[in-house]
Length: 196
Image 1 (cartoon, rainbow, N blue to C red):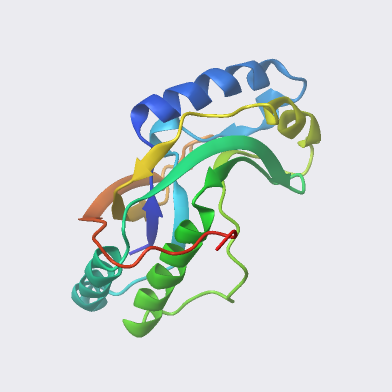
Image 2 (tube, helix red, strand yellow):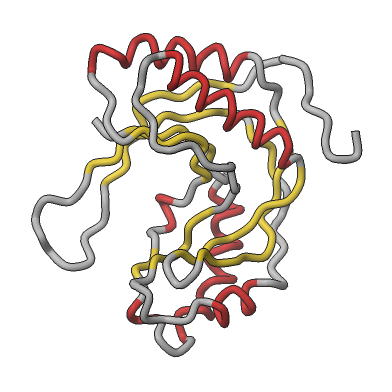
């Protein structure tokens, strides 16, 4: 099964972002983008392409420990950017060092549980809003999103999500996401931010 570990903004925060992104859909070329559904918005911490069922108990035990060792922390959505002409995303501010630390713990949990991982790359926290196929310049979308500043919220849980790819072949169909585990963040030591 395809799994990923994530944190999700709460509904009121997503509502703010939805209002900010509504105007983006009127920009030239927006119809060629595949927009992520609001109920699927999340920050991926660790992606696991295929996880054998027998690995799941060890993985969930390790994610339980990772969540318990991480205290809740504050984030806020802010601005946006793009990865070339492929991905348009919303950015994040606040205790980003704590988010990165939790991503490292989630990645370590997967690795120690024996989950085969993709080539490691630096963690870049982002919330995917839309995907392109290289035909649409995403810079105007990122520029339009630049002034956005959302209300801060407290990240209080870690989730494990199963992603089921579409099989129908219907154009525009998206993966289905199902939460298969959730763990409250606990009382571990706080991660110092960039200021110390």
